[in-house]
Image 1 (tube, rainbow, N blue to C red):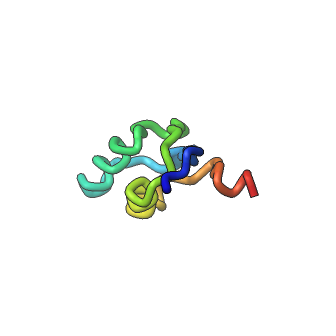
Image 2 (image 1 turned 120 degrees about the vertical axis):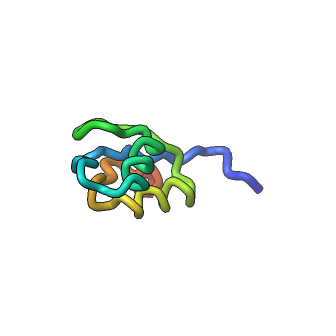
Image 3 (image 1 turned 90 degrees about the vertical axis):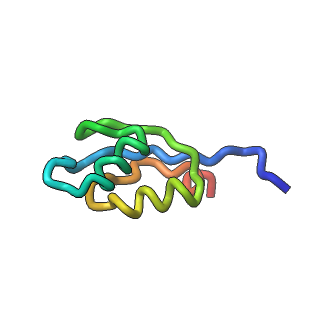
Length: 70
């Protein structure tokens, strides 16, 4: 059964994509980020978690709604 409550993550960009591989720049854009200190609220899915893992040195998870409810 599908869970009706959508869990979300708030991700903040902390590093610059300058002098980074193109795939890392594209991943940041895919996450809705393109400037330092910009935040994006995203649905907590395995795909989004994988994207965050690819650029974990450039972003940080500010808020994790799934942990806040515990």
